[in-house]
Length: 325
Ligand code: TRP
Image (cartoon, rainbow, N blue to C red):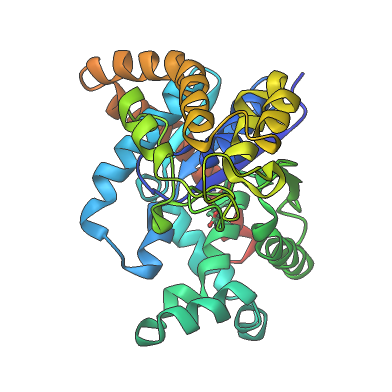
């Protein structure tokens, strides 16, 4: 017996990096065992910023391929692309009627976006959380695995649900956030969250050589200027990354860094080696899947069919409750 229904969405950012994997994907994979899971690439949400729209198709494909290689399983879960089930936009319109504008204008992410793209404060941007709510409730999901940054959006989703249910009668489930208790993965600049937009990422699908070369560019302990200077592992992101991939030997590496027995270059080489070892099975599966011509597209089409069947049922109920003739 499954514990409930999970829905999560992620924007089509293309090839996934180890931050995406450690922070979200590995959790998505685990949840498949105990929940009915629906995982969606939210391409319409990506349009709210109108960046790189010419890459949407390729990014969606690359992302789905990474998801599959990482263990998301179309036999267990519904894997699909948001725009392939257009019912979500219809529900978005209907939910917009019960969402006070004041609630949306107060959302912190909206205010940030206004600062970041003052030339493009579009209507869709204000409605971003309503579309996200539609994603979740269209499939009657009760559990939403997200990072902390999404909690305000989820609180808003719960408020919209409560308001709808209050006006039109019990229809939707109030979704619960399920926080991924995973420390943020810092990028190779040693400062900011690992993200493609900062170009500080290590891609899962990179070759071992690319991975090693990228790691060599990483910032380490800024106080350690020469090979023989003692290091400070506690401020070094390479050391932190070892924690994810080399955990058994951590005390040893820390000690060797502090006493300058190991230099940063050697330390990075060791990380590259361990990381490449850890990613080898993923990379092999990815290559195999990529070779099966049309397979990813088939998974996406099948996911859309299954998601749409659920979506139609909910939408019918919603229109009925709202009194549409
Ligand atoms: N807003 C989420 C993000 O930026 C993406 C998202 C869209 C989402 N719809 C969702 C997440 C539904 C969870 C559930 O990461």
